[in-house]
Every structure is written in structure tokens, then in C-alpha cells.
Amino acid sequence: MAMAPAERIQKLIARAGLASRRQAETWLDQGRVRVNGQQVSLGDKADPASDVITVNGKALPKAEPQQYLLLNKPLGYVTTLKDPQGRPTICRFMKGVSGRLFPVGRLDINTEGLLLLTNDGALTQRLLHPRHKIAKTYRVKISGRLTDRARQQLEHGVELDDGMTASARVDNIHYSARNTWFDLEIKEGRNRQVRRMCRAVGFDVSTLKRIKMANLDLGKLPSGHSRSLTREEIKGLRALLF
Image 1 (tube, one colour):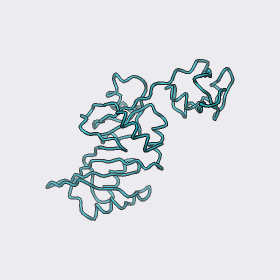
Image 2 (cartoon, helix red, strand yellow):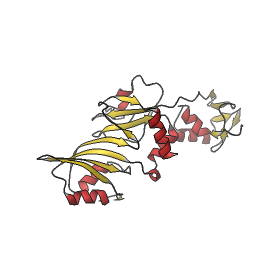
Image 3 (tube, helix red, strand yellow):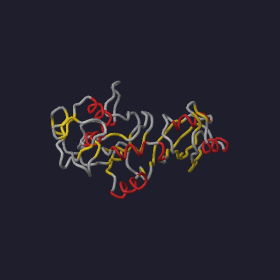
Image 4 (spheres, one colour):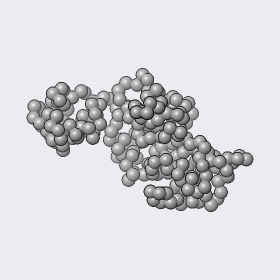
């Protein structure tokens, strides 16, 4: 096999859109992948420009061009491409998009807002890895008035069933007779974390919308609409992660 710029074969398979990296690793373990006619194993590398890579006897497709899509996910849709329970999925908003894009993280069915979709596996892994502490900002509406004590608890960390949360930031607080709106920035990605944090300090979340992630801003993008990231946004993401 060729030397540099060789890459791990499971990465090449995933980039070609044939399978996830984990599935590709399974195929390698099963002996279903060959390079230049020779069976290869997990950890082996190849150069797609000069090596012939086959999976199950078929040539590996050329890698799909990398795409980055920002979606304003509406309420009532699950962040998956196929749902076994038959619930509406975000696929509805990806009509006309060429290639296979995958969501970076999840927003639950009752949460709306900024969702990044891409076929850039390396970027996805880094965005989701806890060590990078990627900031995510949510616009929160709760029933009742957010007290100074509750705000301090949210910012300093609250105890959840899976441990103490990291420090956060509360900003842009607005009150009405019955509700409070505020922005909450966190740098973790636990399941339903914002709702659980608010519940831990005595408040139920009635509306939740993600408005920022890393250097990306939802802005005025209408609900159910999407747009491609600009070159500057992609460059900014990579500057944060690589």
C-alpha cells in the first residue's frame, strides 16, 4: 500500500458515505475489505488516489464532497434520519440535499433551534468530544420568576443524578407576570441537560430553543429552513477544533 497521504481505511469508508466508521471497523474485522486485492485489518491505511479499495468485492465509491448544513429544527421532530416509532423526523427538511448528512448531536422532540448536519466525520467527533467544551446557548422560558439564587446555582453548577454540572452563564433575562426568559450557555452535552438543570433549581421549562453553538448563530433563519455554512463559519469551526 502507498505511504503518505495514506489514511485509516475505516475513515475512508465512512467518508465515502458507505457506512459509519464503527460499521466500517466491523467490516474490517470480518475480512470484508481489501486493498489492491489483499485483505486488510483494523488499523491498516490506504491512499485512495493510488490504491484500489474494495468492500464486499465492490470498489469503494469516491468520497462525497464535504457539506455543512445549519437547520432551524421545529418542535415535534426527532433528530434522527429514521424513527422506529414512526415519529416525524428531520428528514422532512433535507429534501433536495445531495449526499448523506448526519446530525451533530441531538435536540429532543420538544426542543427547537440550531442543528448542524454534515458528512464531515472528523469535525463531528471533535464537536461532540467533551474535552473541547463547545459552548451551546439556549433560549429558555420557564414558569415563574428566576430568582437571584437560582441564577447563581445555574451558573455555579447544580447536582444532577449523573453528577454536578460545570459552570454555565445566564444572560438576557426578561420577565413577565408569569414567566421568565433567559439565555443559558453550557459547555456540556448531557441528555436533556438544560431542562434538568432548571428543574433542579425549582423551575419547569416550557419553551427551549438552541440559538448558538460554537461560532454558529441561528440568527433569523425561519423555523424549518436550512442554509449552508459560509466558508468563514467552516474556517471558524476548524480553528476551534483542530
